[in-house]
Length: 87
Image 1 (cartoon, one colour):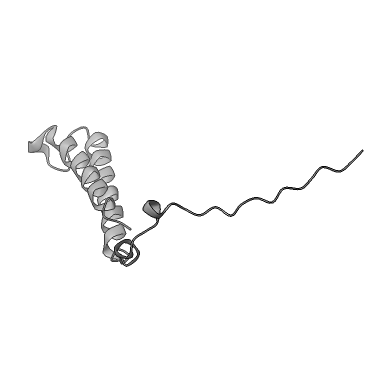
Image 2 (spheres, one colour):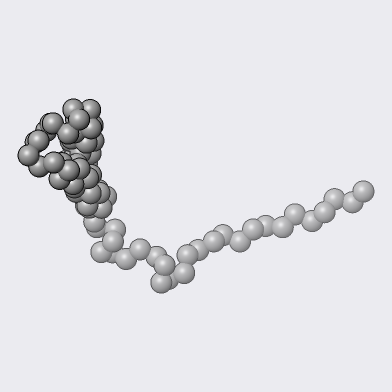
């Protein structure tokens, strides 16, 4: 059986409008406090919610009632906002 012809693939080059500009390539990485703060906010938010549920709404702040849930989820949302700045 005859051997088929081997085709050479062309080298792909990105279009000029898709190439990164000089401004994008000079962006600096995030400071080290950004991921640390995000992890701390996640841990605090989860700990706040777990403490609230396991203590039968007595802790962390009994007078706030169900606003404790808002504080816990607020910490989690704040961590998402911090993580959006991470490069």
